[in-house]
Length: 131
Image (tube, rainbow, N blue to C red; front, side, top):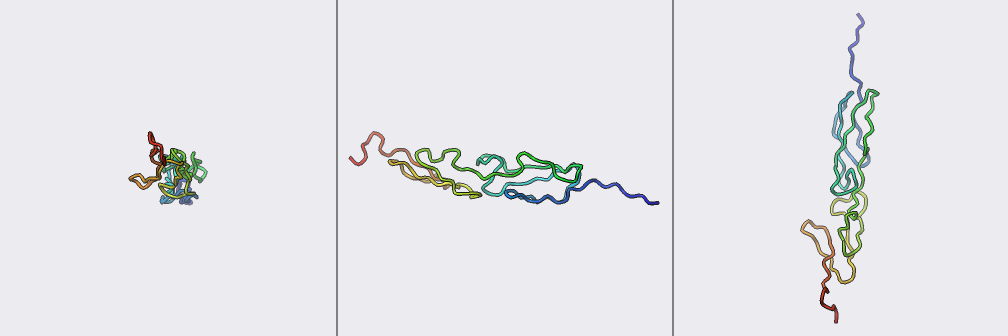
C-alpha cells in the first residue's frame, strides 16, 4: 500500500515587516498570524491608531494581503500639540512624545505631566508685556 496522508497547506513562519514584528510560529491553511507595530508606529500614523494587524494563511501557501499591510510612523504633530507654536516631529520610529515645540513670541514652552511639550497661554493677555 502506497497511501500518503493529506496535510494542510503550510505558509511557514511569518516574517516581521519593516515596522512590525510577529512572534507567531508556522501557520497552515486558514490559520491567522498577528503582527504588532514597533514602538513609534501605528496602523494609521496617529498616536491613537491601532497597533496590530493579522493575515490569514491561504490555500496557495502564502499569507493573504492585509490592509494595512504594515505599520506607519506616528506623526505626533498631526494633532497640533503646539497650538501656539511650531511642532517638529522627532523622526521615524521615535516613541512618544516624539515631537518638540517652538513657541510663538509671548508664549512659553511648558511640559505636560506625561513629559510632552506645549506652548502656554499668552502671558501678556490684558497686560502690555514689556511696557
